[in-house]
Amino acid sequence: MIICKSREEIYAIKLSNQIVAKILAELKKMIKPGVQTKKLDEYAEMRSKEMDAIPAFKGYRGYPASLCTSINEEIVHGIPSSRTLREGDILSLDFGVIYDGYYGDAAVTYPVGEISPKAKKLIDTARQAFYKGIGQMKEGRRISDISFTIQSYVESQGFSIIRTFVGHGIGLSLHEEPQVPNFGQPGRGPKIKPGLVLAIEPMIAIGDWQVEILSDNWTAVTRDRSLSAHFEHTVALTQKGIEILSEVDEKESLSYLKESQYA
Image (cartoon, rainbow, N blue to C red; front, side, top):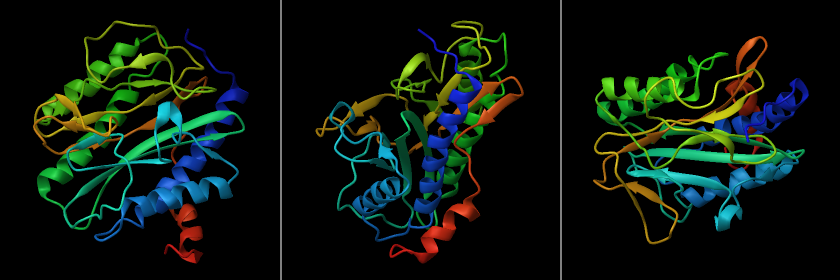
């Protein structure tokens, strides 16, 4: 069942997503060659607690960490570890919290130092695909209009859409109806209405879209081991239009980092 949210509920979801956005902005400044991904996870968990939020992923269906750290060919659900980042890597961070009972969820792919032009184009395409997709989030249109627009843009740039994982509704649960694929034909699925809150998240690859799950039973990689990028925001359709709930002013977010032991 699709649950359209009230103005008050959207505001509550936004508060949770603002915490997610602030922490992702702070993590961005920590990303450099030599950093262990488990240090990013430790920071994300610490900051969540400081802001009275609960890391949403830790323990969810058995996931062992607070942050998903997916490097290069890893699409999603990479588990933080003592692995260190290297110059030229790309790193996808997927993070969520629960605040006052409501979930926030967002993801972004960051470069580690200098990266190749192809990797940069991949990251930029994932980001732009999201913005192209939410342009279809208008009353009376259908969920698959978002899906079709994302797929069309990504493939026009020479990349492929990962089809195993999809976006979703979000609110009092991390994953609610409807599912939001990043591929498909237009004009299908539920109609879009005010009050709809979605986590829209293009996942794309340089090579083929086929997926393999590693032996840890979590980390999803491209089968051909080509680079992958992920970009996600939680978005609401209000009476005033589209609002991206997980966007935040990065300058404000970084004021804490400058004072912390992680700077």
